[in-house]
Amino acid sequence: FICKTFIALVLTTVSIYAQSAFNNGLTAIENGDYKKAIEQFSIVIKENPKNAVAYYKRANAYYNLDDTSAAITDWTQAIKIDPNYADAYYNRANAQKKLGDYGGAIADYSQVIEIDPNYARAYNNRGGAYYRLADYDRAIADFTKAIKIDPNYAMAYYNRSSVYAEQGNDKEATKDGEKACELGLCGF
Image (cartoon, rainbow, N blue to C red; front, side, top):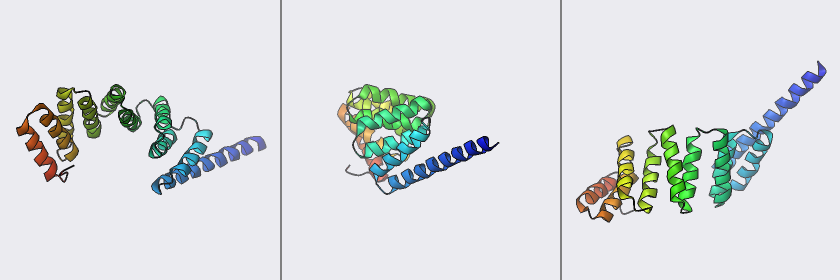
């Protein structure tokens, strides 16, 4: 009986310690103290290596410190733990796009869309990756889908305007540019 009680007490203490570290990590992110956030989420991960959210949050902190490689590693781990973690795929895709890995970014944005077909930002950003690969038809299709999901998505109108301009379709480019401006995104 004493042994079981002691084990329960130890497990409770570990759990409280990890929860405290998690909360401290969230506060550190809110305060822009990304190094402290990494320390705190590392404590959580040490206590519970299957905590996908801790990996995700630590990855975000790494990314804010421009350690894209470490961020990608942690988002990948979060995805291994929770294969339906749309935000982890989304952030990893953004990092891949930043590094010029447009194919990897497109694959991850596509995974986000498979998990959540109404994730307008994933369509918009995948459209941006297609645009970088000069696949203008797919870019336009994705920007259009983002706009269909969120008719007030100024950046999607702006991005689609850019593709139309690249194609020489001045009428549609102007129309989308004006809509983006109407929604508050003028002269980006």
